[in-house]
Each structure stands twice: as C-alpha cells, then as structure tokens.
Image (cartoon, rainbow, N blue to C red; front, top):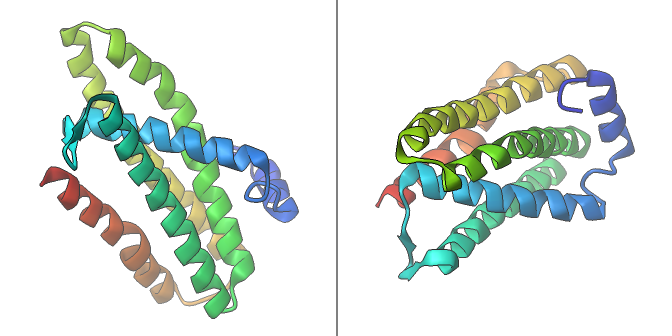
Length: 178
C-alpha cells in the first residue's frame, strides 16, 4: 500500500486496516519506534522525572497517545463535517506511511544503539532525513489521493494542514525541547 496505489485503494475500500488486530500492533510498533527516535534526536534522558527504560516507555506512550488523539480528532471532524470516508482514507494513509517508515527505522535504531560514536553522528543526519521524508511523503500522498478522489476547495485543505498537522508538531517540538 505504500508504493502501489492499487493496493492502497483496496486497503481503503475494505477498511480493514483500522479495524484489525494488526492495527494495534502497527500502532504500538510506531509508538515505540518513534519514541526511541525522539529520544535519540532530541537527547531526551528524562521526562516528567522518569529516566532510563521508564522514561523511554513514557515517551513512547506519549507518542501513541498523540497518534490516538489525532485519529480520534480526525474521526470526529469527519463525522461533524460529513466526510467520514475521506477521513478514513487519510487515516489509512497516515498509518501505512508511518508503518513503512517504522520498518525502515528499526534497523537504523539498532545500529544506533550498538554502533560507535563516529557512526552514531552520521546516523543522526539519516534519522532527520527519514523523519522529514516520512512527513513529506505522508502529506504529498494524502493530498494527491484526496484531491484526485474528492472535490473541495484547496483553501480548506491548507487550513487543515496548518491546524491538524503542522501546529501539533510545532507544539510537540516546543514541549520536548523545554
């Protein structure tokens, strides 16, 4: 579904992604992987007075809660504005793209944990590039899919990107840096 539109359309049409047991596994894997990635990129050693493995688990839980809250808010917005189908499609694209990039990140994070200091510094650039590419790919793929299947003013899509996608990331970034 990541690179093939036919498979993506089939997943969305069947709507099995968000209603399956595999969704829970994918969401958990995304949470723990991006939790560790955030810990590595932002140098978070302690969160809310908890450090070590507890801090990692807490940060991963916060990532999972962020994705859960985003999914719930998007579904509520879809119900309020009568665009449930479009929202479900977009949520599927989000989880497919993040799931795919999670599978790319896992070997790199293992190399980071076990690698030498010189190697770790080079991996930081790769992590940032993968993170930026994952967000860019998600937005571009979602925009192309939604604009090709649904007709609505582009202004609303720009407002959506600013309100639901970019602003929460900026807020999360500011909270984690402080």
